[in-house]
Image (cartoon, rainbow, N blue to C red; front, side, top):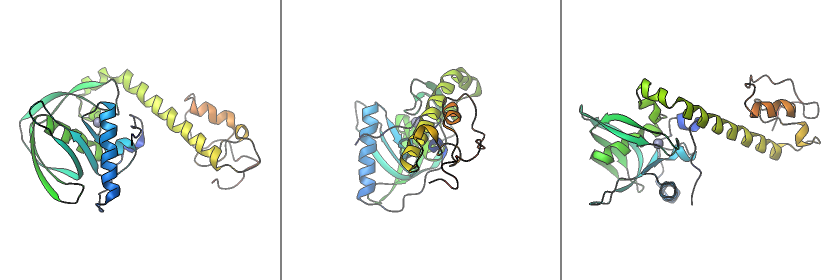
Length: 233
Ligand SMILES: [Zn+2]
């Protein structure tokens, strides 16, 4: 199953993923779905929080013309790294259109588990080391712009702002959509859009302005909706 890839600006990308404790069919299905999603998007690696699931799971394909390297790993962590570093032009499926040279340790050791729960120790260099470090960063809430030098990050400022704005608008639209499902009161959706402002009813016009990003959400709104007083659903 192809899943939606979360883009820069989605808070899930900043959350440290939870440790996998159960190695079952559900985990295997997640790994398969992630691989399918990664291939569909043309990526070489994907972390579970990139598809909105805050679990310590990554998949990758570091195959070259000489060898096939496809991995699905749970709870991966870097247990050792070389002092020598290497620069590589990286991209990220959560940052479409942005690539930048990132410097990372050339060789690393990674402890992880396969989807059956078997412990692995991986010694990696080259492309595999780069992808592993990029994806392990993701499950720790670290994104590849954090690894850019400040000067290089500034070069992407405009693109980053655009991506963030698009994602925030999308999150807000979803929030309004959820509200329309939750709201069972007599008012029309146009009269009351309460999910947006901290779970309280706010007038539709104000909610719409917030969605369009014209005014920041202060969290205060302008009071509860007369038709839906009290705590929201
Ligand atoms: Zn990435």
